[in-house]
Amino acid sequence: MKSDRTPPVRRRENFLVFGSPLVGEEEKKEILDCLESGWLGTGPKVARFEEEFRTYTHGDFAVAVNSCTAALHLSLLAADIGPGDEVITTALTFCATVNAIIHAGAQPVLADVDPATLNIDPRQVEAKISKKTKAIVPVHFAGRPCDMDALVGLAKQHNLTLIEDCAHAIETTYRGRHAGTFGKFGCFSFYVTKNVVTGEGGMIVTPDENAANRLKMLALHGMSKDAWKRFGDEGYKHYYVAECGFKYNMMDIQAALGIPQLRRVETNWERRREIWDRYQREFQDLPLTLPPPVEKETRHAYHLYTVLVDSKRAGISRDEFLTRMTDENIGVGVHYQSIPVHPYYQEHFGWRPEDYPNSFAIGQQTVSLPLSAKLSDGDVSDVVQAVRKSLAQ
Ligand SMILES: Cc1ncc(COP(=O)(O)O)c(C=O)c1O
Image 1 (cartoon, rainbow, N blue to C red):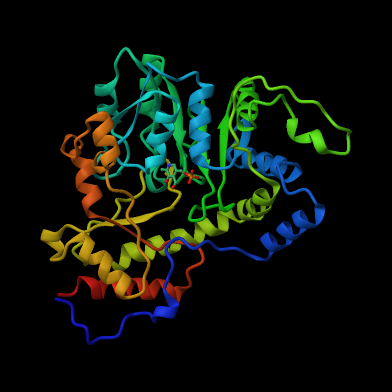
Image 2: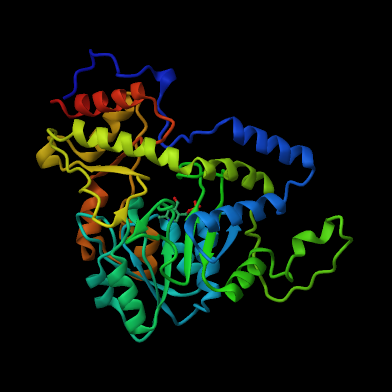
């Protein structure tokens, strides 16, 4: 058992919050500008954020929404996926990926992951393709790109829509091409812990102009194009409801946070890479499984730094490790327990964790350590010390 006598690595009031974002003066200025402009809803700042994001990812069209969950849901609808269709996704993801498929009315089908990369295994995808399969939704886990050659190949061969879940993958590239631009839709998240934050927020990148227009309409109740302008200085504009849409639009006040965040995306990425490299060096002698090196011709977004705690090797369980890190005042995360462990999915789809053995095992062993660009060198040292202390018998 761990000794109670040694004081924690950090004091309680200095608890290191997992995923706390780096927010600077530019964000404050842009938000103030938005507040003073009197236009808080969807407007010019959202349009600017969309344009800058489109440019950054080299996409053709970008549509801002209020979450990546909304982005996934709308992309599935815009791909005309619904009841009677099957959509294949990974068994190791956040519930939002699977829930979006269910909300679209389709049947989610899970494929297991590669145990080293934690990404969906294309061979498992292939094994799950049926006559009803309409789409594949891969997740670039932690920011490491999936095997896009294989997934694009499968999508082409079987005429499937590819919708990339890029919630972790804003800076990710694969053979020089940006994540989110391989298929029909790329869905990004700007949730508070993500690499670019807007509080809540999301973006869809697509090469298809018609699809982009439909997404915009669906994100605002299905109201006709540019309905957001109806209170502007060009005079009142009537709108017409063309489809039964959703309230998924992004507001200018969110974009005001996102614009300066996006402009700093590369410097923040550099900082996270430094922290990542330091963890890799500092932990190499510990009884942990560390992330494998980044694959050639790819760029990792360094969104999550995850280690595996195998109780046989580490001498303590993953959950005990989580408790010890928290006792040391270091915030930690679990990304993720595998999808089939959750009661809802077991009850509705009959999924059993043991049928997805790699995702299940990772879900029981994985721990995410703090990786925000906000961390000082001292914070990183505290994390390293806390990991060492937590593993010491
Ligand atoms: C892999 C993955 N997909 C989707 C989402 C949903 O993103 P949002 O919170 O922006 O809806 C998340 C959020 O954490 C995620 O990690």
